[in-house]
Length: 138
Image 1: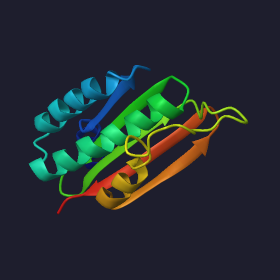
Image 2: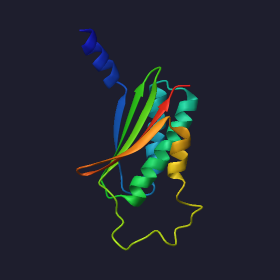
Image 3: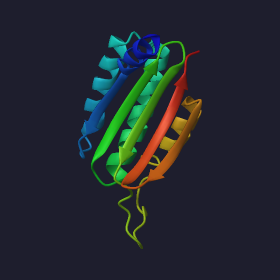
């Protein structure tokens, strides 16, 4: 019985959101994640970091990967948050590069995620790529 209750409580702190393949989707996803984290009573410091990580991972999926993309957000009170964005894989074809992309506009996402996350990584699997980041409670 206790194991079932623990599973139900943990499930209450997971949220899945499809990510539309459009640049304006980042703002909408950030707003939705902020609302979900507020409903879960997550501390403002974690929320700020989570929103930055969400922005970077979602932007990466929209700019560099094939749709569909899905964001999965998990929260374990007293431990922290996990943010995952799964997409259908890279869009860059052989011979195509990001030449001409303004480095002031792009290329810092991984550095930002690395600075904010306690752990982060990339999992390549059949059907796509999942980029994830864990944010620990203080």
